[in-house]
Length: 118
Image 1: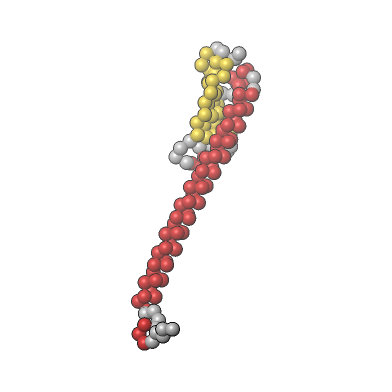
Image 2: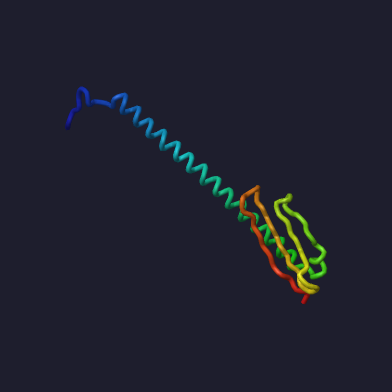
């Protein structure tokens, strides 16, 4: 068994301060990474929920009769985050567009389809 005595028996104040500084820096970087990951997760969740709501609105419009869909015009849904717009292309063809912008995100979700009278 080796016995350490004298000067090498414990950490110096400088060594302890450097270790504490390194620990604090690692903790700060970990916290920043966690916050960024959480924000990314929330954004992905909002986009996924928005896509689901948009698809549901599109399916509602596709399930309705041609005459009912033609009367939609332009309406908003989900507290103004989304809108559905129906525009005539010809007498027997309409364009259905669904747009959704989750919580002021830079990119919006856009879905469109054509609906025939026949």
